[in-house]
Amino acid sequence: MRVERGGRWRNWGRSHVSHPQHRVLASSPDDVVEAVAFARDRGLPIKTVGAGHSFTDIAATDGVQLDIGALDGVLAVDGDLVTLGAGTNLFQLPALLGPHGLALENMGDIDKQTIAGAISTGTHGTGARFGGIATQVEALTLVTADGSVVHLDGGSELLPAARVGLGALGVLVDVTLRCVPEFVMRAQERPEPLEDVLDGWLERGASADHFEFYWFPHTTHALTKTNTRLPADTPRAPQSPVAAWIDDELMPNGVYVLMCQLGRLAPGVIPPLNRAANKLVAERTVTDGWHDVFTSPRRVRFREMEYAMPVEAIPDALRAIRDAIDAHGWRITFPVEVRVAAADDNWLSTAHGRQTGYIAVHRYYREDPTEYFRAVEAIAREHGGRPHWGKMHFRTADDLRPAYPRFDDFVAARDRLDPDRVFGNAYLERVLGS
View: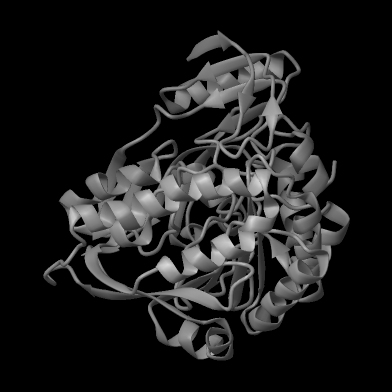
């Protein structure tokens, strides 16, 4: 264990800043046990920090900040079960799983997070038959507040709590994932009229392996993306390097940051810019490795709110968001992202007990998202919405409790494992109570 003087920390989206007194770097589970004792002996809270890709202050602390980035890599492989160090970043997985002929079953479009951070906040991808990354967790090991090293597997009643644990139950040191044989995917992207997409939402989401779409506010069209899983020996047909650079770097990162900056200075240009950008989106089909199709580079900083709703509520909710944007005269540069996921039984999963659709809204990080996000949240709550734990929201324990049938069970588990709130911070106090 290495202890350093703390300093200023901020997350990737620049939405939160904290000033930990100490920064501790752990390179083994024993180091984590020692770090927890170090914090407890000084009467300080301790929070694990990963890639900083949560838009909430879930990882913020003024006590001890614990970096587990050195706890990474493959620790064991047993058939399709792969145990990883909790600090392993998602972008490492193709190189780590490939030699074993394995892949992650499903993932989102950002791969910078650690596996611990991704499962703890309920990170997900899209696909009506596929759950979030936490549903792939078969076992995990965590260090609890008294320094105990606890291993939870399928026989443990607490595994469904710890999979999406919000960092409230302990420090994850390893995670065992149920993987699948390596595969490739064919991605088909095309612009379509938004109303046609909404009218066919349930059928499209259910029939495709992975379906999602993006809608640019102030336009009438959506960009749909349909991914089909194919055997690993399927010939790949990636884009040419030049075309890939234009579609994945120049347009969404280079040109887009200019649009965001121009929109801040002259909001009135945003609607025509969005309509122009919509016309520039070309239909394309790509066949490539699972990771290359699931993920996309995200270099333009933004802030994000995402809400999970019953899948059938998505069309009405999105129409209401569109109406709110028009009624308030907001000028929104970032597209709205819509996805789908299978129901699961993890206690604090946003998809707990129901087939789920997701609506994510974004704003450029130099813009104040508050008014827009509060309006979207109000609409989502009217449709039974649950907020993504790692993305901005304004909910509290009192109004979150009715949304989760196992909420009180989770709080009881927290009381048992961390009665003195060694792992507490302002975020957890707000969403779970003191």
